[in-house]
Structures are given as C-alpha cells and as structure tokens.
Length: 367
Image 1 (cartoon, rainbow, N blue to C red):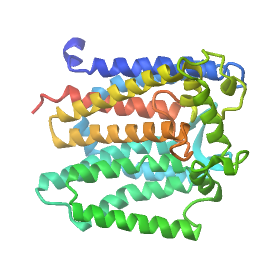
Image 2 (cartoon, helix red, strand yellow; image 1 turned 180 degrees about the vertical axis):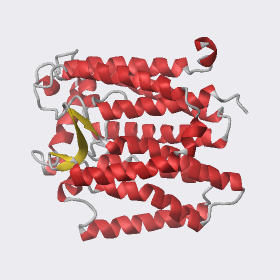
Image 3 (spheres, helix red, strand yellow; image 1 turned 90 degrees about the vertical axis):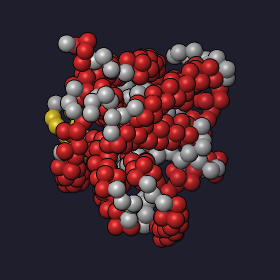
Image 4 (cartoon, rainbow, N blue to C red; image 1 turned 120 degrees about the vertical axis):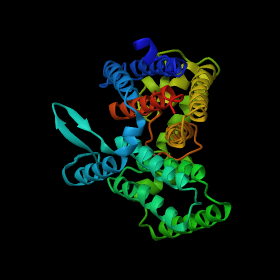
C-alpha cells in the first residue's frame, strides 16, 4: 500500500532537499561552534525531522480539500496576525512571535505564506474556470487578498517576511492572465506610491530605510547600517576558490559576521567552502526550482499548477534576496535562506509547502 500510494512521490526533489538540509546542519554547527548558540544544529535537526513528518502527512491529504478551506484558513491567519500585535512577544523591538510556553514560540507570518498560496490559487482558479479575463475589480480583490496580511506583518515590523507575500500575488496575476496594459498601469502606480511613501518618510521605519540604502554604498556608514553588508562581503571574498575550511573562517568564527547561522549563513558557507562550495549550493537550488516547475507543468488541473508555481515563486524570491543581500546586490531585509538558515518556522513552512507540492504531483493522473 505504501509503495502504491507513494509511487509518484518526487523522490528526486526530496533528495536535493535532504542534501541541502545536511549542508545546513553542518554549516550551523561550524558557524556557532565558538558562540553561545553552540548546539543549534541539534535543534535544526529536530526541525528538519519534524518537517519531514509533516511533509509526508500533508502529501496524503487531497489538495482540493485544502483549497475548499483556504478562505477559512485565511481568516484564521488574519486573526493570528492581529493576535501577534495584541499579545505577541517583543524581541529586539519587534512583535513577531506568540509565546506558547515551554520555550516555544509561534510565528504566524511564516505560516500565512502557505495560506496565501492556497487562497490565491483558489481565487485565480475561480477566475480561470469562469472563462473571463481579469477585470480591474478582480485586480483590486487580489491586491486586498495579499495587501491586508502584508500590512499587518509590516507593522510588526517585519519587512522581510512581508515582502515574501508579493511573489504570490505576482505569479497569480501572471498565471491568471493579466494583460500588458493592466500590468503597465499597475507598475506605474506602484512606483508612484512607493516614491510618495518614501519621500514622506511614513512608509518604513528609519532603520529599515537605512538598511535599504546601505547596500548601495556601505562605506558611508561602515560601523552602522553598512556594517552587516561590509562584513558579509569580506567573508564571501576571503573564501577564494576553495574556502578556508570548516571552523576556520576568520569573519565567521571571529564573530565579525552578524548572525552567521540565519540571515548570513550563505556568506559563512562561502568563507569556509569558497567559490566551489557556493556553486554547489546554487546548483542544488537550481535543480530544486526546476523540479518544482516540472511538477507544475504536469499538474492535473489549474489550481495544482497555481499552488506549485506559488511555492516556486516564494522560494525563488527568498533565495534571490538572501544571496543578493550576502553579496551586496540587495538590501538587508532579514529574509532567511530556504533549507539552509536556522529556524523552526522557516523550516516547517518549507516542508509544509513541499508536502503540498508532493500532494499535487501524486494526483497528477487523477481526473
């Protein structure tokens, strides 16, 4: 029975994911070896084990049932985000977690990403099924669908996680059949709103604005907003071709590179394993993204395609922003690197989304 049920499971994709997970555990162990965070690799292994179990469980639930309750889940997600604002635990000036007791914390904003993928898939699927083109009213509804949780998370403040909601909207509009004229008008409006919000100083908090501009010229404030980028660039560059070896990174082990086990884990990995190691990691990400696109193309119906492409878009966005941040091409936004960065919420979300991808793949021959 197990063999027949999981015959169409994407074991190749899982293999790539597990290989990255092993690299994650080893790099977290190395990056935290001489810090107070030593031992986090054990916690990461626990997160990965839990994620694997959840992935297999979710893959067995027909994704059409998940689509049926998507809007209810969306409402619960909004309630959870409001609860963070009211009773959330404040850490370093931000309320992003709900204390569950026993040292456990719940970060609703990570789970909302998956809810948005399902909700957007159902929303745009209903439009495609109706046989009509996207109207301006549809566009307004889709912006509200993503915009409300986006605003709630931005107020925590958590710019990084809020930004990861946008790829869900973009891929939904693309697959939903947005016209070039509509896209042009929306882009123009977007840049106008961003320009007005930026000049007014009300769009972001001062430290967020400083982070978004520091990557352009980090030397203007080398000990302040530019510090993280400078140290990351030094770590990446000093790795050379082959790297300095595990536990031998001067920036990482010398405690110059900030939070090398989460946001800047790619920089730490590059310092220790060099250009060759970086290419290996990038190749694994490329293979994972290609498998996701392939699975989207073989889905049994449009909502299955929407779901997998939503997962792919969010994953690609996180990879591009995090790695771009580490090499000075993107501003520092606190977006974790999927499957490499330490963190329970990020790991569980990734495996949950992979579970739904497997779910769609396993039912691709069902009419």
